[in-house]
Length: 348
Image 1 (cartoon, rainbow, N blue to C red):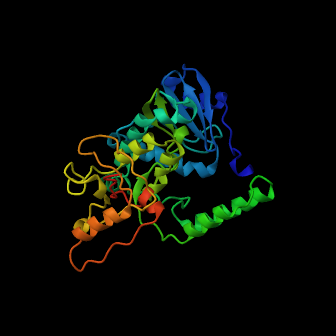
Image 2 (cartoon, helix red, strand yellow; image 1 turned 120 degrees about the vertical axis):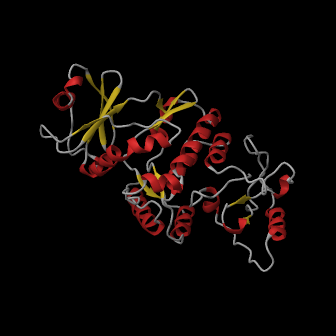
Image 3 (cartoon, rainbow, N blue to C red; image 1 turned 60 degrees about the vertical axis):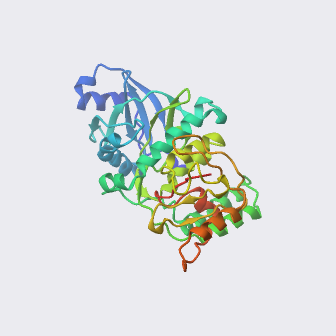
């Protein structure tokens, strides 16, 4: 598609000239093509460095954010991320900033062939990673100066209109068959209120940007969409790359630790519930269509998701202070993808 075509192409000769001219200590290292995406062309320099050169002007603000923020972000995260060590300036006809960072080991989760049933360790590692990345403390320390999500992925009226337009283009090209279920989903999405989330986001977290060696996560790369916004944007990795036990491990690790008051060994597994650790300890039940399943075991974890919302509704009614109105049921999307980082998945 023309909108993804490169505006400036860097070949190995130009890459070597730029690197040697600005970093003479690297001049004798071989420069080899490594990868190319929509936004960047990547070269491997020697054995241990990767240099990224933007291909389109729209990607340049993201490159500047990577240069400015990744070094400050890295110490706060439990998984390695690229940290720019060599920052290049426009030269030799190349108009934009570029940088080199240590190459992280591993291959993309998308290409590794690791079966979904063997990704529990990957899910747990990514959950812990996003729990740290989405921390309100980190947003206060590192988020200042980052833009709101520039593609407005949590702005449902905008995204629904865009999706309808793209689906219409696909239908006109004979690549998609219109169906009522899709339009019903879009109609429901269009009614969602604006998001107030303000977490630090990777912004483009999918299986190609998660590096693994075996079933161990070795890094998270490609931070050109780094921004602040609703953490649900990053949680899409749980539905695009994980399933079953691996998704359960992700959600358990991503959420705050279970509260002993709402999920303890002495409580009946029929009355476990999720809660938001906030004012008055208010809680709400799961919906009736969610089957019981075990939570991955860990410290203080040993509950099951209730089969019937009536079980949890009764518990909630008993624990609610007199005169307090019942909290309305949340939508499935809100239960699955919390809109704020303080939502706790305390029991399944």
